[in-house]
Structure formats: structure tokens, C-alpha cells
Image (cartoon, rainbow, N blue to C red; front, side, top):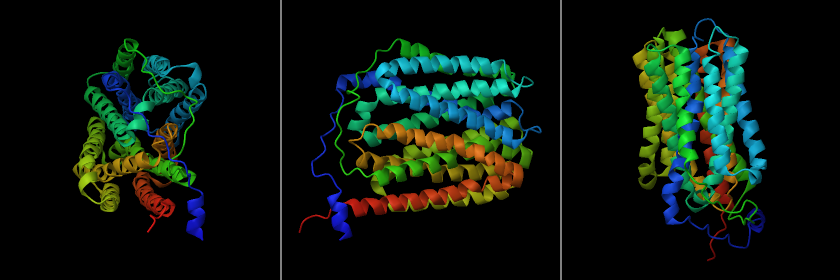
Length: 409
């Protein structure tokens, strides 16, 4: 009876095949897809900036967490506002405005470094969050044909560019930590969105399908959409809890040199990016269930020595283990999402926004955990989040099996 009800809720009309973009437009889309590198830079710099601003010296953890919350609020507010008004602005226009705001925000931060009032830094972070939200909106509008034609590949490439941006900006801040002042570092960072502004200014807008075109859903399930959104929320939250608080943990708990702490964070991003690239091959050769279980166990086992270690070398080893464990989860989710939501072009917007929202919202909550219970416990919180990711993936697999109509015998 239950299976009959489930089958009756499925659409009876086949979904239209997504039309692949013309081959001659592929080179034109590369500079726009690389925009996720800029998003990774803007998000990835937060964990290193709190070190560059000397926040490890007697600064309330709740105030540090507030910086992440302000960034998150600006990103979400602008993304949803521009998403409702995309018919009034092309993706190229949004990307240009966002990169210009990013330049202005980083230049503003150069004048707001301590001992300036923290309110100025919060305002500049609000600008940077707004720029990130606008970049996301512009890029999703530009890349929509590719999202529909090759969803899994596009989503994976977006994630790789995003991780490379976070890795690059972390190494940049770590490499200039003892060479330049925090004010000069902010001006150097402003060159990143400036380069994208100049590149995008010379590029033409890539035509996208009509925004109001009718969409027929192939096996679309609102339950699955919610589960996928929650999954990415927790997964990116786990990753960014570590990226936001790892340098402070190494400095406050282990007495690590601030420059070294930033480079250990870069090691985490490196393991994450390289692991995701390697996972693309593993997805074709290894059972997805084995990858999921293995990645989850590896990540959880990495958090235990990280919270208990008394040496920087031990922390670096644990960070690499956690990065390798996390690496397999995102490609697995991207592949499953690509198969389930190929005919729903608006899903990827919400998909990535849910992920990035978790990436910033979770570190804010961790600020309160650090304040009341200490950073050792705070480093264990993402381990429980990893278990939640494991449960959500199992629920998605179960939901997919239940929603699959049995073949006629």
C-alpha cells in the first residue's frame, strides 16, 4: 500500500533532456567558473584574519564568532535579494558589482585593523559577505546551462575551485604574516577581487536559458531536497569550524607560533582539495557506501587526537587525516545530487548557499562553546556533526530506494 502511494506521487511525464551548451562557448565559461576561487578566498580568509589581527591575545571568543555571523548575514541577505531580482541584472553585472564591493571591503579593512574600533571591522566584513552572496548569484545564473547539462561535474569543479581559493588565501596570509603589517596584508588581499574585476570586465555575458522556463521534475522529491540541504549545511559547517578555529586552537592550546598555525590550516585545505580530486577516481572504482563509511570514520578518528594532542606535529597529522576523511563526502553528494535534480536548475543555488551558510553559522556557535567549555571540547563538536552527515547520507539513500519505482516483471 505504501509503495503504491509513493509511486502515485511520482510524475508520469518524462522530464525533458537538458540541452548541453554549445561546444564553442566552453572556453568562455572558464573565467566565470573560476569565480568560485574568489568565493573561496573571501570565505577562507576569515580563519587567518583573526590571527593577523592578533585576536589570540585576550579577545572574547563570542566576539570572534560574531565576525563570522555578520559575514554570513550579509552573504545570505544579498544572495536571496539578488536571486529574486535576477531578471533585472545579468550574471555578469552581479559579478562585476560584487568584485568591486570586495575590493572596497578589503581596502576598508586595511583602515580598520586593531586598534581601530571593532565596529569598523564588522562593517567591512558585512560588505565582504554581501560581495560573496552577489558573486554566488551571478555565477549560478551564468553557469545554469552547465548545471543542467553536466550537474555532477559542474558541482565538483565548483567545489575544487572553492577549495583552491581557500588554500591560496591561507598560504598568502601565512606567507606575509611576518613580512608585512596587517594593514598591508589587507591591501594585498584586495588585489584578488581586483584581478577578477578586470578579467570579468573584458568578458562577455554568456547566454543563459530563460529564467521563467517551465521545469518538469524527474523523480524530484522535496524530502530529498531538504535532506541534501541539511547534509551540505552540516558538512561545510564541520569543515569551516576547523578552518575558523584551528589557528586559535593551535596558538592558545599548544603555544604554536601564529605563522605556523596559519600554515597548518593551509595543510588542511590542501588535504581537502587533493582528497576531492582523488575521490573523483575512487567514485568509479569503490563502493559509495564504503567511501561514505570510510570517510566518516577517518574524519571522526582524526578529531580525537586533535583534541588531545600536545604537539603541533600531532595536530598537523590529525588535520591531514580529517581533511582526507572529509574529502570523499562532497564528491559523493555532488554525484547523487546531479542524478536526482538534473531538471531543477534552481536547486544548485540553494544547494551551495545552504553549504556556505553552514560554513559560517557553525563557527559562530563554536565561539560560545569555546567561551564556556574551552577549545578542546570545541574541536570535538564537528566530530558529532560528521556523524550527523553520515546519518543524513543513509537517509538519502533510503529515500532514493523508496522513491524508485520497481521495474515491471
